[in-house]
Image 1: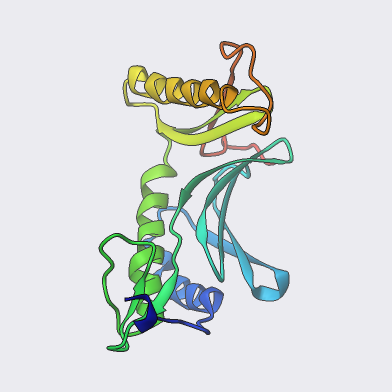
Image 2: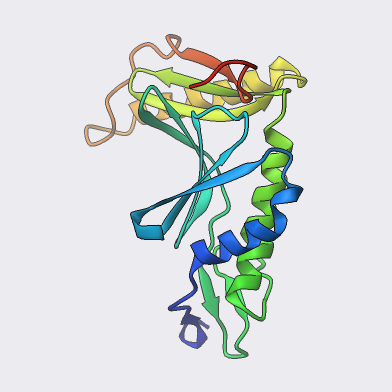
Length: 201
């Protein structure tokens, strides 16, 4: 029951991440480096040889990967968000999960629920076989990382889903985003996830 839940008032997520990273940096396939923002309440995680258009972040309420292109936010690519609460048995869990696991401490939750999954995702997607796909149709944008070893028909289905989404937006009404007149006029840009040797940005 909701009345039995207590929201966790303090758990320094950034400090927990930094401590975990210090112990687990060797497990990443590409060397990570962090920078502090907002007086230490937000971190940006950069990886050796990974393009600057990919933005990995962690703060006190969320963790994820986003795409920035030509100095503007493009889209969220993946998230490992958390909303930590505590039950009457003094166990911690993420209330965003359908079947939440219980943990003894909020730090244990963050590590297992978010940080470890972030590590797996990074190691699986920051490879020579992955590219950042950026789609734009007028002012609407979408981004994802795709594996170039997979069939292009699979990626075409996802692009079609984006086109379908825009066509439904067109029918919502006057308060919706601007109408999209030519949905076939989508611009698609591909950028290798890893920088070319000898190139700096």
